[in-house]
Image (cartoon, rainbow, N blue to C red; front, side):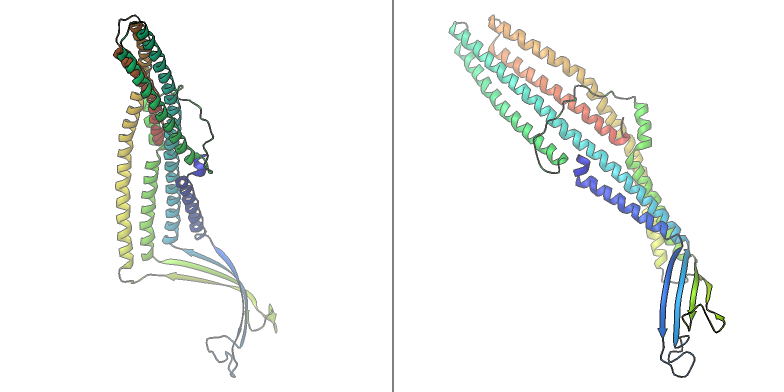
Length: 394
């Protein structure tokens, strides 16, 4: 859905389509072309065989000919190869746009999932705060707690109510941000599936590195750009080399519109071969060659950088994914421990062995632990998506 509605991705697709059309046109330039010409030329007579205009063959001339034309030169061949490299570059840029869009969708989709979880946590926290307020009020009425405990519990309820409203706003915002990416007509009436609890396994680094070397679109784009720049040098050089053109004509070119007249055959064929040799153009060709070489040199630098950047990103993204996955187990344990801590601290408070501040601290710790675990799962999911921008599907 996001691919269908993303302007950037659709622009990349359109650019790839245009690049393919340019390659088709360049390939057509290498092939013979056929055409048909039908003409009638009239020249005012003046008593001579040609008429008033000496360049004409006669006062009446009929031309009906089919023509096959072919041009042979380095420029045409290099132009086609440059167009083919440009198409490869456009395809690689489409892949880059697609993988970048995946990261955007994962980020916004998981933001909705995490916001829903945090909203559920905020509701549980408000319920816990209300239960604790009831406990402090019961203990105050029984003379077992000071009124300060009730006030602290009331403050906690107020804070949790504010947190709940903030969580509702955060969810609405995250849903808006996802909706504008995936829907052609803006709408927010949708649900998402919470798939963060089943994270994908992280492959071995060697396997990821091999896939990155084979499937990285940035390196592919830089390679195609270098190939295109190399062919552009030959396009410029072709202007210094001779070019050959061939024309084959078949039909009539006569004074009578007939295949034969007075026993003379008017129907026939002819071949014209031409060689064009460039001599002097005030250094324009040399300037174009120099410019093409500079672009090729820059393309070589960018390819080298793309390869280095791939290795740097690979280690960075893989390290982030590995760290995020290892942290999940610890974050999950923290949630269980915080939940148990709150339960025990509440029991100790009811037994008069803990203060209200200890209970409030335990409540806050549980909320932070739950939110941290939710963020940790989203972090690992996003780390996988970033890693897949280098490797494709893991």
